[in-house]
Amino acid sequence: MTSVAAQAAKPPIALEEFRQGKVVVESLGLMGEPPVDLEKIASEVREIITSSAAVQGVCQGDYDSLVLFSAVYWGIVKTFPRTVIRNVRNFLNRFNDGNSSRDLLFVFNFTDIQRVRVLESMQHGISGIVKDYGFEEGSHMDYWKELMTDIGMMENARTGRLSDYGKEVMAQVNALPAVQAIDCMINKEFDQRDALVGMLAVEFLAAGASASIVEAGAADQLFESRSIPKTWFEVHYHVDDHADTLADPEDENSYLELPHDTISFNMAQLAHKVDHDGEDFHAFMYERIINIARAFASAGDQCMAEARAVVA
Image 1 (spheres, one colour):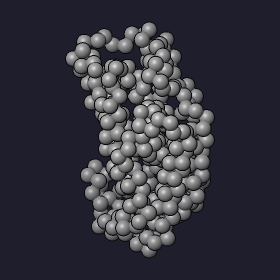
Image 2 (spheres, helix red, strand yellow; image 1 turned 180 degrees about the vertical axis):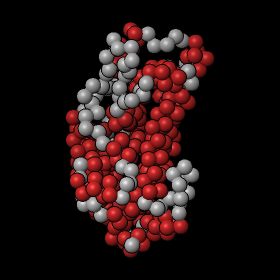
Image 3 (tube, one colour; image 1 turned 90 degrees about the horizontal axis):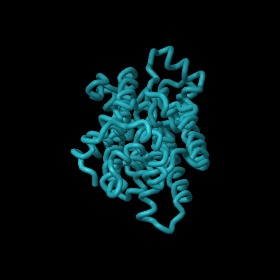
Image 4 (tube, helix red, strand yellow; image 1 turned 90 degrees about the vertical axis):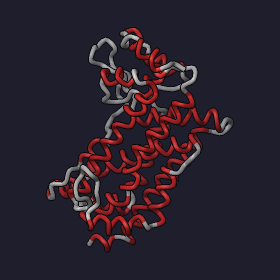
């Protein structure tokens, strides 16, 4: 395993090495672009989560639905940065042998990360990669806090402290079996492959729900009329993430781009090869992601059916 000191002694990425980013990905048995069925699964996940009562209500411009939407999925949003960091760290600690952190960083360098941050991460080996990868999820959680603050669920976004009203709503929501079920599926899974596929499912769910809400005129009017920020939804609204997986290496300001869903797929596939050899990975992935999507939709349905009175 390459030491942090040895990595720090290496020069910054040379142009030729940058050109070989795709080669590095392929040499690790990974990919730079998602398979077609991954995109189809993402589309199906969007249909499932959009059909839930909570998302439907937000799309129709119902304020109470927005409050309950923020409540029912807050537990996942709040813990997801830590879940991502734990899963990525465990993966890198396990699969880093034989591949330097410098090589693996090409796999974990994703959209909108500038090359200067890439170099900074390299100097800190696995811990740098994990921190860099988890940073974006932490910022997404902050956007959700802003939403909850503006609808009165939190006292302020900085501390994330719930208001009295927020505590009342969350107590009701967290007691629902369907809400407890999605927490177990995402945060309490010990099998590495299953946990990584769970991460992929959450990414699809966030993108799917966001796309439907951003594209709904009634939802847009709801946010604007009450001056509620919809930043969380906008940052998860991906029209065409995969148009250019590799940036132009001739451009000095360019950088390698690899979307989160592709990264999670790569990690899960490697873990599957080691732990579940002989099983059909794509069949398993499809079944688990769809089951998680249905569980998230059920949580939204149960929340709307049994907790709506508490927000009135």
